[in-house]
Length: 77
Image (cartoon, rainbow, N blue to C red; front, side):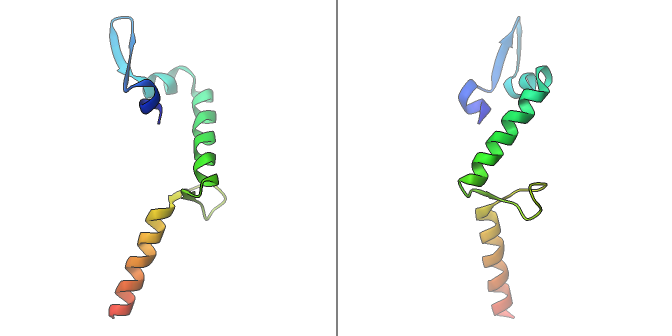
């Protein structure tokens, strides 16, 4: 998302650096806050799901695909 908004690279002096890496390195606290807010938004929009109170997140479509694939293989046996 950051690269979509601000581009993949940023020029610092004469260097072309990764926008994401510069943000993470220069202000890790703000980076963590922004990352948490982004994840919270995906959870609210029901795109991500967690089963362990937020330690691990999964894409809803991946969970649905996993269930469908396992139901199909179970029915085939």
